Length: 146
Ligand code: HEC
Image 1: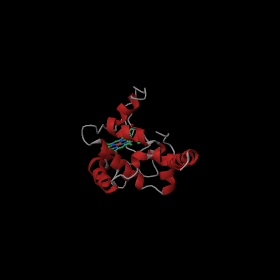
Image 2 (image 1 turned 90 degrees about the vertical axis):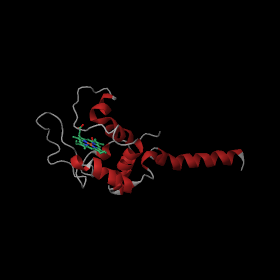
Image 3 (image 1 turned 135 degrees about the vertical axis):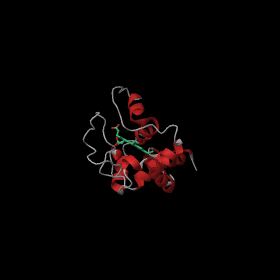
Image 4 (image 1 turned 180 degrees about the horizontal axis):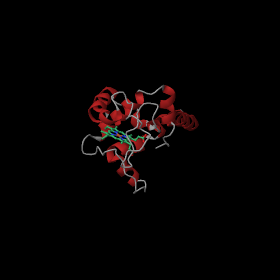
């Protein structure tokens, strides 16, 4: 292959490959393991069928929000991979503090000392796998190339 062909080939790989790269953390996850972990660690609040807590848009008396659904009716798919990961690992308060928001009290606990990073990605992979393909693609498109 000549130098120019090589360049051309590389460019094609980059163009075709970049949407997948932008979303690489959630590709090829162990969704079955994720589902089991979800039932163990998340279902109590987010619901066995990812339906969230009743009236999840209405704040609790203490000002915190109930657990939102993780199905397509919630706003999980509005967020990029990193935010979902950090929200789970650091908890709601930790994830927002990392983004400069210090005065938000969140009912979402940190799982940093409970499950591994890989297990968090498997759970997120499982959650995403339950959405219609159109919603999965929308969520994937929120990830800047990285
Ligand atoms: C003790 C109850 C509880 C448990 C257990 C729990 N969550 Fe949450 N989670 C919440 C609450 C409450 C919120 C909304 C918090 C907020 O507004 O900051 C939330 C929010 C989230 C969000 C942000 C969603 C969005 O659209 O903003 C993610 C992601 C999340 N949880 C993932 C998980 C995962 C994954 C697990 C299991 C490993 C889990 N949660 C377990 C209570 C819980």
